[in-house]
Amino acid sequence: MISPSAVSARLKRIEGQVRGIGRMIDEERPCADVLVQIMSIKAALDGLVVTLAENELDSCMAGCDQEAMRAKMFRTIQLLCRGS
Image (cartoon, helix red, strand yellow):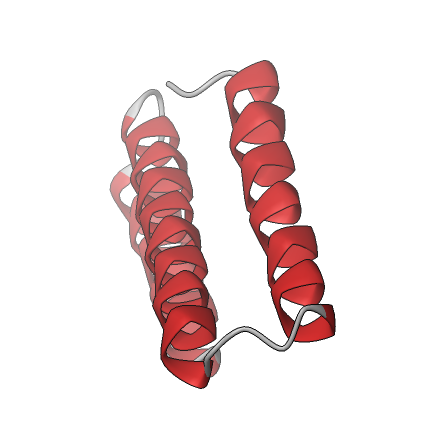
């Protein structure tokens, strides 16, 4: 189970990366450099999505009946697919 402070720390790191891209653009850094940083942020966000989805599904396995588990899994899958 991931702690709220761990999620917050990851989000702050991502926020810093986004601010860094703003500085890169202000400094007129090469587009390739900016794209590398954008892909790094995307990977960090994707990793956080996976971690949170795993946490959500893991929490539903503990103490849920079969029907509640199916509903929670379906809802989580829909949330993940809606973002694509």
